[in-house]
Image (cartoon, rainbow, N blue to C red; front, side, top):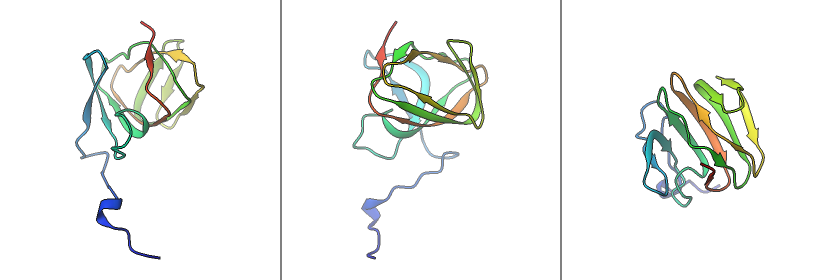
Length: 120
């Protein structure tokens, strides 16, 4: 096996790495942020770590491709009343619609196929 070139690997620690603020296509920023090492994907797609500050509510959106996430810290309240907590692994099918709220902030490991579409 040949050694891995420095340009072929990126490493970041989720507890001290700099997250990039997430800005929606219309220029709105709600305070959420993304840690994403694959710079070939649009921010917030593919695999990434997503941080929501306390009190934040996402916009209502439709998934364009499946989404899966693992709650690493905090809890997330879904628009249908479901409460997700640390350790919950969640799957949303392509085309599903929802929004999320976090009372005390949360951190998620996410894989999402494509950018979401606003339904507001």
